[in-house]
Amino acid sequence: MITQEEMLSHFYSHLKSQGKKYKKKSLIKAKKAKPGLVVVTRTSDGEETRNTAEEGDWLVENQTSAEEKYLVKAETFEKKYTLRHSIGDGWGCYSPKGEIYAKEMTAADLAALGAQDILEFQAPWKETVIIKPGDYLVIPTDKSEIYRIARKEFGETYEVVNE
Image (cartoon, rainbow, N blue to C red; front, side, top):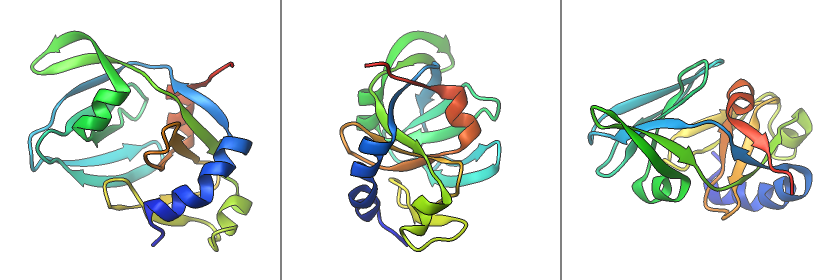
């Protein structure tokens, strides 16, 4: 399996030069996760990954048609989101902040790493994730991690930054 470091090393300059800069356009709903909570992330194309909450993690729900849920480490959450208002029962409505480099992946992009139809790599939370042609590969501008976003969910949550 390809590690986070290998993926960042291979794709950072590629995404910066051939991709575009984006920002999240939709609000998110979030609350502190209970340690041990298992979160299965589902997108419009099925199960994406599983993650188990650790102390301090946040449970995030994107406002997508799939109601995509995932876990975010506390330090990452603080960099990416600002509280707008409380919703109740521990939930809050948050505005996204920060920008990413992203590119829709092609078969040629994946073939450069020896993959044919899909490429497996290590997610920031150490689980195996896949990316296939049509998905978006994403790197925050601080180059802290690399991850996949399914095409439909990417379109529902991100917009190009006009510089």
